[in-house]
Length: 143
Image 1 (cartoon, rainbow, N blue to C red):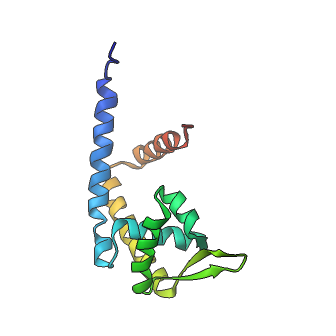
Image 2 (image 1 turned 90 degrees about the horizontal axis):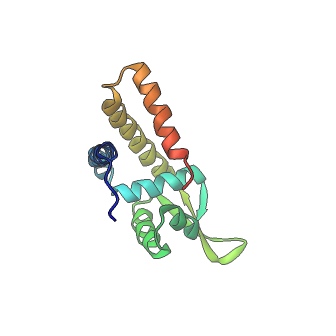
């Protein structure tokens, strides 16, 4: 027997998808910085972790190491990251962000926060607080 669809759940899912698409397409401003959205996301991970192994980055992005390596190649050419052999394991590569990469990442973050603020500006302060609480509750649930 087919499970019945809950129209409210379906409506919320569609709305979440549309909002996500709107925000991500608005983040196309990352292209102005010379990066794709996945490259910008990777650069942000590297900035947050300071030094990280390629394998670890791939796990966090839920992609294969080879996909991360391709992105890192481009980012290294742009002077945004540097790679070196892990001193504890010569088979592993450690990635770190350069000064230029930090500057690009900070500008991208500023633009992303501005875009998100614009999207959320339609909510009153109490609505925004409740929205944040609900969103956090959904995010924290166990899978």
